[in-house]
Amino acid sequence: MIKLKQYTALTLCALTLAATPISALADEYDQKIADQDQKISELQQTEQSAEEQRAALEQQVAAVEKEVTDVLKEKTDEEKKLSDLTKKIGILQEKIQKREHQLRSQARDVQTKNQATSVVHAVIESDSIGEAVKKTMAVSTILTASKNIMEQQTKDKAELEALEKDAEQRLVVINQKTEELKAKQEKLVQTKLDQQVKINALQASIATEKEQKETYEKQKEEAEKKRQAALKALEEQRKKEAEAREKAQAEAEKQAKQAAEAAQKAAEEAERQAAEAESAKQKQAAEIAQLEAQRQAAEAKQQQQQTETVTNPSAVQVTTNPSTTDIPDAPSVTTPKEPESKPVSNSSGWASPLSIGLIVTSPFGPRVDPTGASGSQHDGIDFAGSAGTPVLASKAGTVVESSFHWSAGNHVIIKHPDGYYSYYMHLVSSANVSVGQSVSAGEILGGMGTTGNSTGVHLHFGVSTALWSGFVNPGPLLGV
Image 1 (spheres, rainbow, N blue to C red):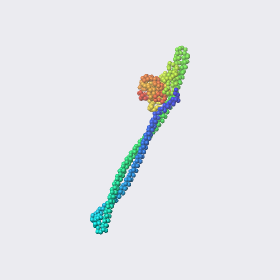
Image 2: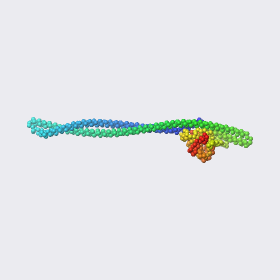
Image 3: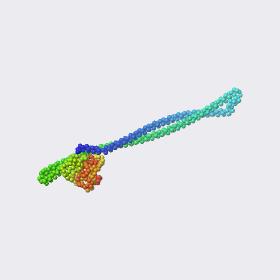
Image 4: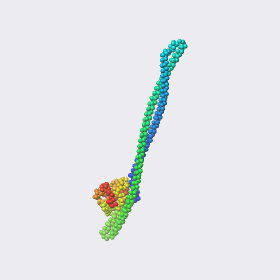
């Protein structure tokens, strides 16, 4: 048998399991926060990669800008050289023009003065050998000077043409290269700007994900506060139920003890009457009374054993065979025999659903859900008791449901002639009645247990105006 300390440990375990849904909610927020951290980390890695790409682009842009600067400097140098060449060309052009002017002037002088320009003509025209020599030397000098001027003129024109052509080619190449470098620079600058836009977008995404993480952290904090409040409420409920069960157990033990003492006295009285009986008829009557007293003593002993067995879904009940005075050695899972006296109905017509006094552990109405699975509205009243305590029909009617449900456990629903339905939940085993069966007030439906969505042995008793809906407070009907 499970004793009181063992039951207390089991109850604490049940309450710990009841807090699981709230703990699971906190775990869910932990997972969400971890997911946000992962997203932020991935975005930060992407941002770092984008920053590195931007830095590389900046280096490329800087290199191209330096190249452009170098080319522009080269272009400037070439332009300066071109300017010098232009000046030189101007000087050459001026010299050439002067030479041409001089040559034209000489030609005009020769034609105007009819002076011979050949050596032969100069000798023939001379009056003496000395004059001939002088004229010959003058003509030769003039011819030599003209020849030199023409040669220099030709040379300067060729140099001028070469310089102009070289300058033009250099200027074309420099301009083309400059344009190419400028286009490359503009492309790199545009790429750099696009990269900056990408980085700004990543930074905005990181900020958004961080805000979402903060939201989850706040939600987790709120969930943790609710969990602590729920655990505190569950602990208070556990203490209240434990006190009620101890009280119910003490009362049951007291009643069992009184019943055992009364049965023992009855048995002793029956034995005395049997011994004193003179006639066979009196002796037979005394023996019958003795057997009945022994039966009552056995039932009282059974009830006492039941009160010692604290709430346990696997608790078993000891049955007594009315035709013998022996108690079977091997207990079987059955429901205690119907008591001889029916419960008395109150003015409302509803009788107590238990064979013992009614001790409320959880009233009708709003409450903290002990398991987190049934909601915050309690649709009935929970009564304390020990495993196997007889559960009685509170009012005559017809059984409309007798089965097992994940929340109600083993349960019975009775429809009454006045249109009400009564509910008897968490029975220790399958009910003694079946669907369609008519039952009377006080008839045993089964034994108290903790099957289904339950944290300890108790009877959930409910009353409604329709099947599984329209629940009303059973307290005023039972006078509790």
